[in-house]
Image (tube, rainbow, N blue to C red):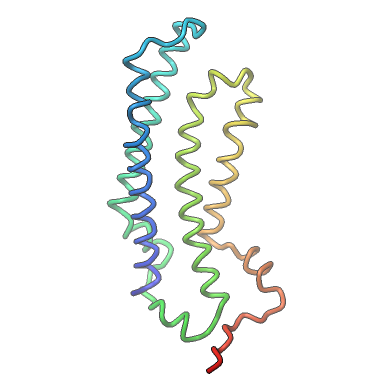
Length: 175
């Protein structure tokens, strides 16, 4: 099995995880359209909440299905050639294995924070001010998304921090 194959599996699993979360929270989404909202929410905000929540549900579902069905294409962008995973273990290079693990973590962070960004949209009505919305609801997932992209592309800062002593070989087991 290649690194690309394992990354593809991880992306598919993340897509499936997103789909399962959508299914789990669907009753709450449907209730926005069926139940009468509280009186303290103005009519304009009620309609806007419904629209933004609907966009979140559609956007998240589309994104989850895209990940699930196009995981192979996404993984091939990061690993164009099928390098066997065993070759990383045979070289006994912990750095390579760590870099590969960072890519999987990057895929997870990117995906979960995209959905968090979509989920933050309806909260703009409850945030009070735009500044509150940006700091409390939008900035954290944007930072997580940026970190995820960085880990997918490189992650070199974390590799250097983890292996600053340059001892990156895996110890041979004692008999």
